Length: 413
Image 1 (cartoon, one colour):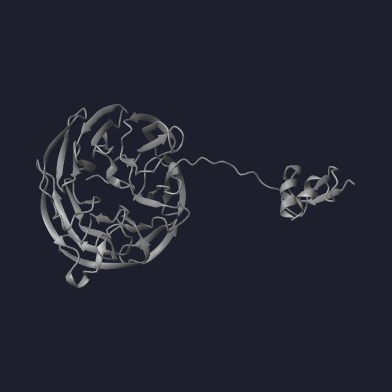
Image 2: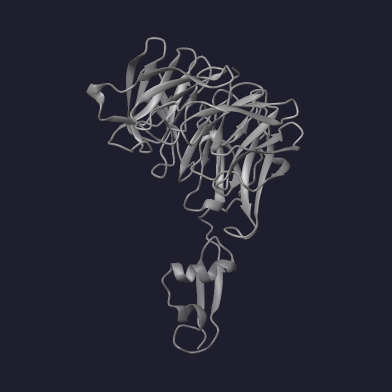
């Protein structure tokens, strides 16, 4: 027996099989007639005039002003549950909408944003067969106006792949060179001319890695014994390393490798137990200018921690540190509060309760800075706080599953 079947739907015949399933009809009814016979069913599709016609979704291209603004923020997603699909999302805090997205390949790392805010470089790793095969590391240039991939430079396939942190790859202060940290586990530095895209070379840095800029042709690297050393670059980008400093903190209280820059030649490191250590790199060898406690005996249960745990406000000379209650070796744990340390007064002047956990914080530039936070793995949102009161003023969600770093418009020192 042949069965006629009428399906009322705005879809065309191509959707008939799906609609059979959605209507909970038996597979036999969809494929043979429904009564066990082998006759072919007739499916007549009748449009439902009460429903509006489906409109095609249009692909849009957004063209921006071409210069990164104070309200623009890049949020990176390392994509830990799908590591070949890392990305960086550009959002506008004013309108609370996404402006664009860059695909960064395996284990998305932070971006190298040009000092003028008109372009950026992205360091990416790809494997020939997705998760295996020949590895290719490439630095791609993007213009801020359209975020389309442009010039590519293949670099040695040695760049460090860790939980993303800003020091893995940096531009020199003048934007002339890109400096990349390598780890195989042998450590070295790769230098690329950011303007021409030409590879300058690879320079051995045994036991020392990561990149902390301290001027147009200088940067520091962090060594395994807790010391620092300065690298000086020639006009062509060749690197010469100086002597390693003494360890900047005791072995009983090591510093995080995620410091915050506080001047053209100075960085502030935060130790696991909560000391703020100011390092001056204006000379030939880095020296500790000052070491002061962030955590008092009364607050000894509190610890700094996170992926991007500190930010600096130049206008007030204050460091913002992400804090949590925890014991020894909890320096990677998320924080629930942000403590504000006044570098001039040498004391904590404010404690902000975030009302939620966070693993990374940042401050927007400009006359009215805002505090921004994200939480790795547990939230897809960028949270926005008023800096004076500490109250949350908004959020932008659906940015990714494993948000790692926040990058705002660069400001020259």
